[in-house]
Length: 166
Image (cartoon, rainbow, N blue to C red):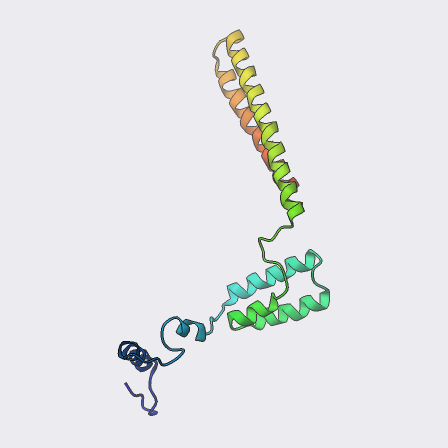
């Protein structure tokens, strides 16, 4: 397939690449997996904004100075390809990175919260059974104990989430 300018169109190159693979010789980067590496991955506003948000997070964590932030934000917001966008985030830890000390601390907080919740739940169950034995089943007991258990369980869990986020 030949375009008006005398060169081959993209469709013609793809057909030529398929014919080359079947005939035993290669055209280089247009065949197989290499073709995908040649094409630049274009980024949109959403990816640029996500990178800018990451840079601001690194700045607030103290990993970047104000000048570095300004330079990297300019690079990220003007980026057209994924490689240009990644260059703005070079030498910075990934978003999911946590130090080993913080991971151990968060694990201890979760384990402690689970133990406290378990004792709380067993205590509430014993109190509920004692209430039923002493007073018999009533609407007040059947509503108060589950709501109290759910409410205080939620308070305990949300408190542990806040402690882990610090």
